[in-house]
Image 1 (cartoon, rainbow, N blue to C red):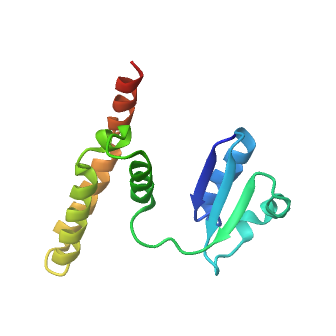
Image 2: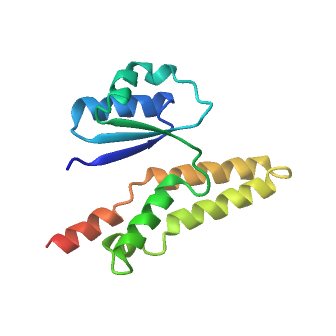
Length: 144
């Protein structure tokens, strides 16, 4: 059974290009999430494949709540349980928690210290530019 990719915002520029890439270069099935009022111009060329159920499905809805990567992490950890390799790799998720704290502080201080607010946004971006190898290391440990 081929892998399945879930693309939020498939009607946007990045989402539509990702769908094109996956359909052209992999055997993966693609499920795309689109809001009910999203313009469809970026995926019009995929309509024959969507209607023919050729490895692509389009669903409509609104993704609310947490960032999708966190929902995915929580879904995998819930499915695999507390002994999950992902749970051990993510640990206490200091990057995610630190980012949330920085964002909240940046929003609060922005009326009085916009330079500090902008600095915190830049700090969060820089933290996420550093590759996070925790999952890769945890997988290597379980495979040896």
